[in-house]
Image (cartoon, rainbow, N blue to C red; front, top):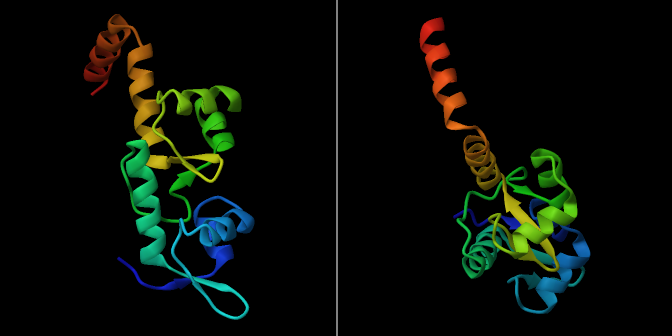
Length: 140
């Protein structure tokens, strides 16, 4: 784990959240951080531990935390072609792998890609899958 120090704003960007939520999590003791006279300092290892704990509570696989690893409800709605309300309901009902940070749902990009691929396979009738595989072999 990386032990570099992060500011509240950088932590908020990584979580696709706002600084207010991060400060709330720090103040409530849910996210470990050190208070200096003028600002909070969050170790990357503490942030990764926090995300892993939240994911474990929701039964979601943990991936590497990068600036593009987490998606918001709006981003998933656009990617899957559904409304934001539908995405939130599917997250609540555990039809989509998701976890909450504060009051908002977050999704791992890798999980949404996997879910979308499986959904496409299930939506395609078997006869079309066989026909497309035959066509692919003929084109080769």
